[in-house]
Length: 209
Image (cartoon, rainbow, N blue to C red; front, side, top):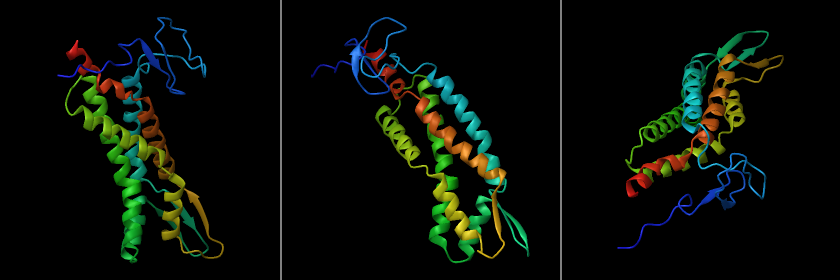
């Protein structure tokens, strides 16, 4: 039977969260990375508390993001408020069903999936669960990868192109739903950054000890 690999913490090393440099674990609260000067710490400070705070705020804003209008269109002839779902319905009924599916997945399904995934990671880490640790680590990497490609402007422009008939003297302005949706995207990205994936493996290390 091969010996268990030694972790960086057991070897007395700290990984810098900014530049990735491995440094010796010096028991000093003011210890900094010799390369970039960032503070060194074994785990992200208050990782779970910050992650939960950001997730709760994102959950609260997710509802108005999908109910309130994201865009207000006004012209000489008419005025119209459009939500994300009304845009999806319009694209679907007008025959642009691939674009409708893309907007629905990017604006409704993906943010909700990220919220559920991050909540699952935070809940299992808080309860020191050893359930499917490798799969949870891959899930975190997937959430982090999706967050990097959360291009809100692309989705909004796509929605506008599908909804607006470009006529003379027409004006377009963002609605409160757009602000809420942007906040959900930003909060989920910060929640993923606040969560420390090493917490997933801490119960395994304690069991080995």
